[in-house]
Amino acid sequence: MVMAEEIRAEMVANVWKVVASAGDEVSDGDTLVILESMKMEIPVIAESDGVVSKIAVNEGDVVQEGDLIAVIE
Image 1: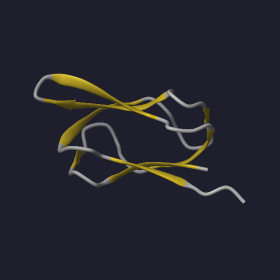
Image 2: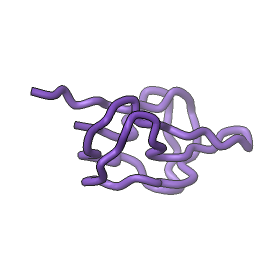
Image 3: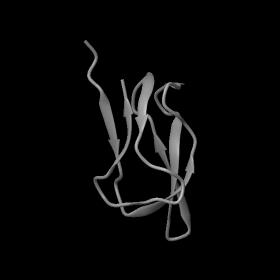
Image 4: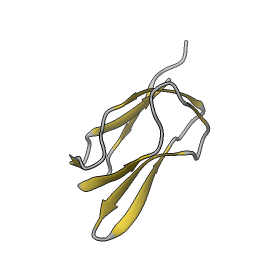
């Protein structure tokens, strides 16, 4: 049984671009979402291989520290 991996925001930021979608196969290091904070683009990357089961944000959303961004199974 594989544990689902939850990717969470590490800071308050705007969701600038959603790169991956539910059902996508991703590898460790792939970019899922790009956040924007203080005019810097911050890629949110997969930390393991798997399939994206959920993208919990939309472009233009504001995420708070600890908010769920994606789930990889």
